[in-house]
Image (cartoon, rainbow, N blue to C red):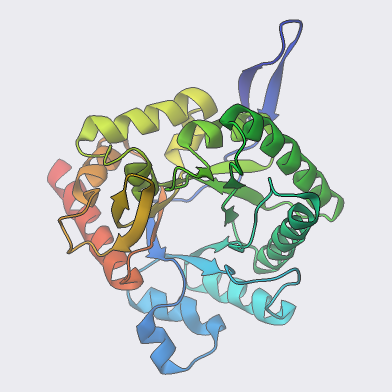
Amino acid sequence: MVAVFIAGDKESALFHLFTLGERMADRIRFGPAGTPWAFKELRQPITELPRFLHKEGLDALEYQAVRWGQEPQIKQEDAEKLGTNAKANDVWLSMHGSYFISLQSKKDVAEASKRRLLACATAAQWMDAHLIVFHPGFYMGHGAKEILQISIKIIENIVKDMQALGLTIKLGLETMGKRSQFGSLEEVLTVCEEVEQTAPVIDWSHIHARTQGGLIIQADFIEVIDQIEKRLGRDATENLHCHFSRMEFSAKGEVRHHTLAETRYGPDFRVLAHVIAEAGLKPVFICESPLIDVDAQKMRDIFQKRVQKKS
């Protein structure tokens, strides 16, 4: 249990207690965001994907529920089988929730967004996934401070609804890459301080894009990690759920993901791998490049070489 001090109004403050390390990864892990093309060509059921990844030497998977509506779009028995096979093949399972979530929109859109997120959370718990990742929403023409407070209240209510349904899976707020999107590092950390059953999802490529190429040298990555540890504690930094790819960006932020081989784009995973190895952290890395499993293996190999060099 980690205690984090949160400042409230001038008359009051509280200690927000939350469990962030209940289900920590035992080591640094790598895997794809979704289903690799090579697996699709096998025409096997999704429940067999963990076995495929294990053969590739990968040990994480972020199941993609990004097109889901307001009901789970996987049968419960298939979800449970996927979870069972993930454990049998030592694959750390998480889920990416629906893209069609805009919590800060008008009431009917926000309610539909909530139902989509609850549908994803229901299926993720069937799978016994460790985390459900989601995009918090947009500023919708409002000021950042106003949207932050609105978002905190909405996410608090969603967590209450989840708890009423017996859904204990954590909600992972992803750092977002477009400046029109709610989800700067500061905003994500603030929500995680304020709302129980939440955790940050650090998308390094999104941070790079949002800061206009701000992740170049080791100190840039260390600054992000230091902010997380200062706000959420050591457990949070040791057990991060991360996304990574190289990223093209414009003045508005994120444009598109690129492969590790496309070195004209940043950030450079070799720099981050050095920081992670030196700090002794053990994040889960989900690859979002166009070559989701191939580049996940490259990331794994880069990190292993870094560790060997250190020893």
